[in-house]
Image 1: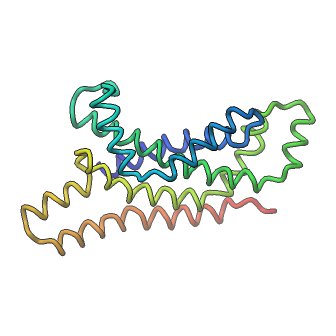
Image 2 (image 1 turned 90 degrees about the horizontal axis):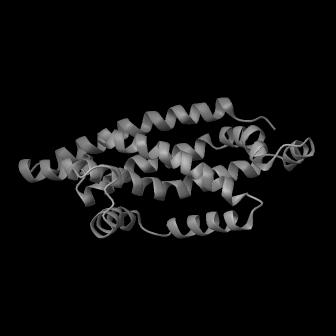
Image 3 (image 1 turned 90 degrees about the vertical axis):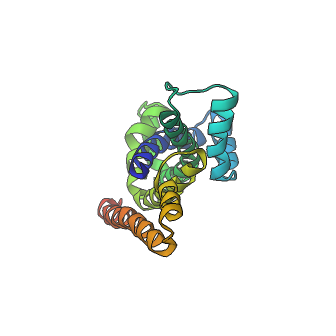
Length: 206
């Protein structure tokens, strides 16, 4: 469950975060303002509040089911939605920092030959920006993996919820806690090492 939460949330965060980054550098004031307000607000709200709002606010008050009325499936989907909404703000800032590393002369040259803003972003800027921010995005992914424990607050049976149940049943707090801590190390350490190696290999030479 932790791996599923991480994988789906990471994919959604990358897509939404990229769109937010595009908004933040957009020449359209409305889009730029929306991106700025969204990032500044979401980054300063605790993740637990966002996850609980997705469950109590969206599901219980507004009746949002995300295509399923099954409690477990609905809780999982709402948790993914909350993680995407929260993590995308950090992905956005990482990608925006990568966009700022691309020389402005390249974008100006592309505009001079008739490319639109979206074409410049898609063909010239973002490919270089992504190569420059693999390291920061790896940190965001590792943080997301650890943040999935918050999903236990809305009843999603991920690692933290399972650990709590096992401790209550077995009364072996230290041993069980050590096993779950090791599990997170196994999940995050290889990911960090691989993405760190990839970042150095694909770094843009200036």
